[in-house]
Image (cartoon, rainbow, N blue to C red; front, side, top):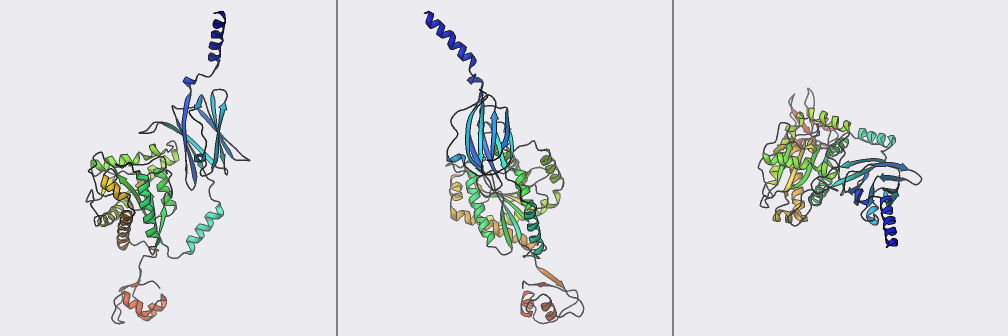
Length: 433
């Protein structure tokens, strides 16, 4: 009995001196998403944590020390080698803490932040590893290339909604919105690539999340002439069906459905994980709001043209373009629309969204609407903009043809002219050479 009592006292002493595991934060799991210019690492944690982060070179590494934390299970395997991350290692730090080391392929600029629980996600520690920016020499080359081009292509920004941490809506059979909208976006990209005078720019090219304001920023950096965000709606009633098109509203939503949808889409930043503590970004968004009114009308016209084409391939949910305060549509100088291609929560429409044939039909309809819009809204200096010439005293058709280096026959044909008679002040269209 004396031996047992002595052992019990020793056991209690050991327990008191050991880490209080019940009070430590658990790191449940980690996920990696690789984007072209950054890599995101997300740690699922049981509660908010205190942590520190620092970088090391030769070789490049990032070290994260989390106070009073432990691992639920080992972090290892091929899933932890994506983007700039080559591997992950863990170990104890100061007895009760956890150290996580990320081995990197090159130096990066890290940014980290904590996220509170939202919908299906609990607490998260997010680490964004930003690639080094392009050199000044590369930027100068790009600017010079733009200057050398006299007439440029129209640039169409294609935004596949959601991605990465944010799967979007779920279908009746479990289909994720982020996958089907990316499939439609890629088909639209392929069609625009073959379209004369147009060039597509993909806002995201893979399965990773981009913040809503960042999507606008990417479009503007690429000097986009149009912004199309592609989504697939969901509703608790699986009978809801049909495509919809939305434009920005600064004065309120056109319906409760539009308001609900905007709130749902705008919450993507909380799901996908975006740091909201950047005051410069906040100021920029306010400035964008102030300069928005000039392009809403153009967006509505674009929305009408696309919606008219969508009506030719199937049912639409709303027969008019809706409006609400969508954060992703807030580029002040780019006509922007959000296309809800279908209700993914409807079993039949979910099936259509998974059909490659239907995806192509949807992409073609969007492109047709884009064509109609630019036919009535020419952008000066682009390949699709018609060149016009005002007739002055003494000019002849043959001299005008020589001036623009085109044939007289082509000039007469383009303007449906049966003879060479010209009147001062007439405007004729100059065809492509």
